[in-house]
Length: 95
Image 1 (cartoon, rainbow, N blue to C red):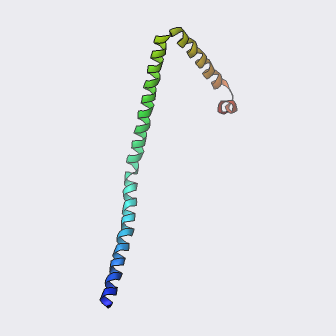
Image 2 (cartoon, one colour):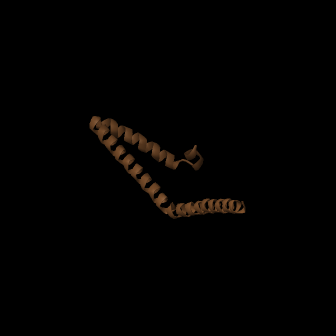
Image 3 (tube, rainbow, N blue to C red):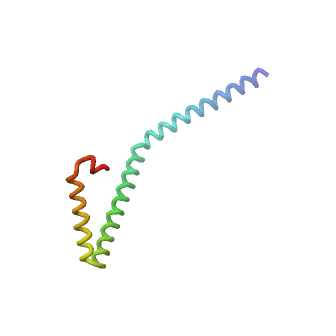
């Protein structure tokens, strides 16, 4: 009977050791992979930025083809608003 109790105690200790060791091993693996995850997120952000830049260019090409005078008028209005925002004080820019 004592052997059975001793065997169960050893088994429980081994399970506890494996679970604690597994947790610390998992944390170590996550810390090792952290730079790769950061690079992955930067690459994904760069890809999204490139896709949006391409979409903006293609939309401008379409608008120029459709009505060049209207496109220039809209561009000048948008550029004027951009310059006005740049000249405004900090509180007005953020508000």
